[in-house]
Image (cartoon, rainbow, N blue to C red; front, side):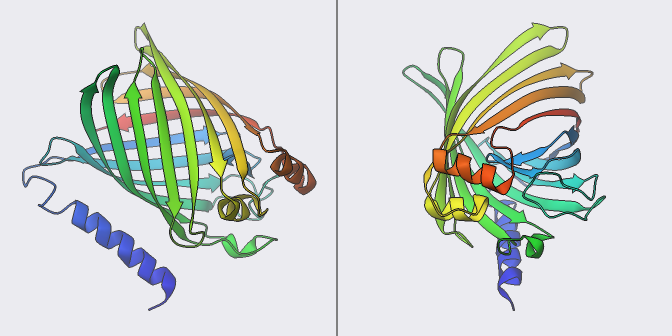
Length: 275
């Protein structure tokens, strides 16, 4: 059995364990969410993966646990619409195909209120990345890899600061950190606005895997504004404007040398259904 098969079996085994009766009541009813976004670019942790329009479908299945919290299993992907990926990291030549497929299993628990912290929430899980065309990368093969992650968030003065720790235990064996703050505004009549700003830090091994340069430092400063419209009880429409900037000077210069925009701006339009 090869290494990739072992990783797949380990991920499936974890999902099976999470969904077993030890965590999920026998009479639990799943909640299913389906979404599809069209994005003008695909950007991951500051790196422009595809500098053309892409389609990003997503399927989420959530189950209540015996403790009243939730387990979620998510499958999502990025499909290229053009053979030419533009000034980007992903290789050309795969129009109409998935250039990335991800699987996530996570458990979320609300710990309640502590002093000035409201809705203190901890989420942890496993993130499995798959790059079907990873063998075509010009500076070294990129394939399947997996990371564990922990996100901590709370409500403070109506805003929600958060911090996340990601550790790639497979190919990279190094952490990536992200901290930020988000706030939502309800305008009534089904409209709401979500603002988010965050900053990442890449260790040298993470930077070598994600960006192709073995250096550590502050990575992507990212901001987004998402307008949501609740069309009906099951349907939500959304549009967002997003921007990112590489903060480390060495990484910024490296992006310019690669011919990849270190300050990408992109837009998304999507629809989501809940059942």
